[in-house]
Length: 187
Image (cartoon, rainbow, N blue to C red; front, side, top):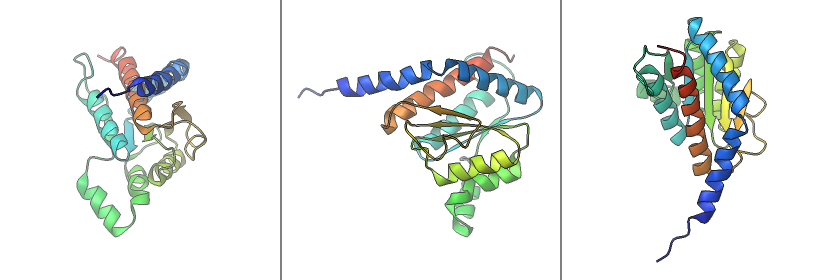
């Protein structure tokens, strides 16, 4: 049986091209993160489902190692503490599971990066709003089209696709480019 992959590959190519189209903004974000880290700040990642896994992956790349051996870069994913996630969701609502952590952990010098393929995840929206209120620099990675997160953050990386898998692939490339930029600066 012949399986057709052309559509998926074309969508992947289009999504990755939208990363190329945002290279100057990627550089600006990396420079903001560098200033944050040098000023004692940290990077806080968050997302749901596959985006939660991506958030954890990127926090690990920075805390442990991306390519080269270097000192850890202060980075945390708000998706890793099952006690916080389940207690908060049980006692309150999942809608504020990240914003409550932002209120307790974030400082004005931090960079908060929210991932949402739809751009509509209410707990990510609430977290970015809380981070903005705390004076953090906020970045979101979303899919294409209008969405709630697009104009909420300081920077939105909007991927030119509505297919979740393609958007996640592009978010991975974007996140790794951020790691690449940080690896080039920190020892």
